[in-house]
Length: 297
Figure 1 (cartoon, rainbow, N blue to C red):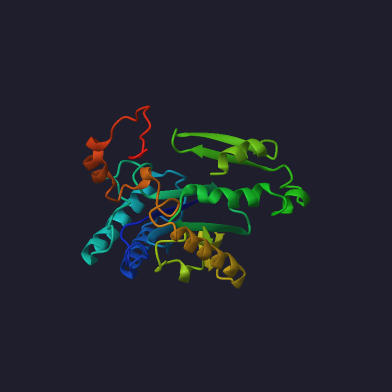
Figure 2 (cartoon, helix red, strand yellow):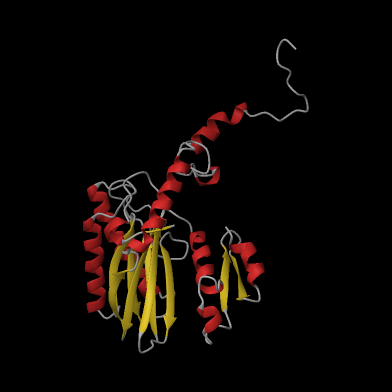
């Protein structure tokens, strides 16, 4: 069995939130090579999307392995140190703890892991995203694995005809449910209705902080070795989607301090919202039943 682990974190933006400094990428690649030489990893590579560094690794320890998560944590600590030396934006901002505690759950970095028996020809796609939320994947995953108008194989391929099981997470209540589609399709759509594809070279915004960036990296895997990556979005066929996303961004931008351009109140942790709430607390009064009458009427 081989395990594919993709672990990412923002340990410092260059310039602002827009990109990852080359020195951070170089340091992460050095750590990957050391881990391969030590036998911890079968293979690995370092990629980025926006200001996030992603470690794409193969190994034999299974998902949630403490050794792998500890290695990723130490790597992000090393890149954070460089980011601080360079004065990069938000250095180490995704590292929410001072010490590693067994695995990365709840510690800031994001990760996705898959354990599988390697087939004679094994391919994987790694989707990296920045400036978006986990729910950004809901629609494309639904279209790929549950919509026959998008994926004709759901109708004509005998192995796909039975459908797929979707595991949906409620991140607020820390719970999950599995929908067996197509039987549970309509039920599932009630829960998943809650990014723009770019080639790697364009995955670092310099105009505003949007639209979301999504990178698709394709690999062949042979004996645990990563053959690639191939930049799957480096294709003029996606130019229309990129233009449309930019047009939508410009429209949203015109809303200024109003949502949806501005984040909702609960997501404004990096702003003056906390101090403003404290300063204005004494000015809030209960709403009475009296209706104010304009003067002179």
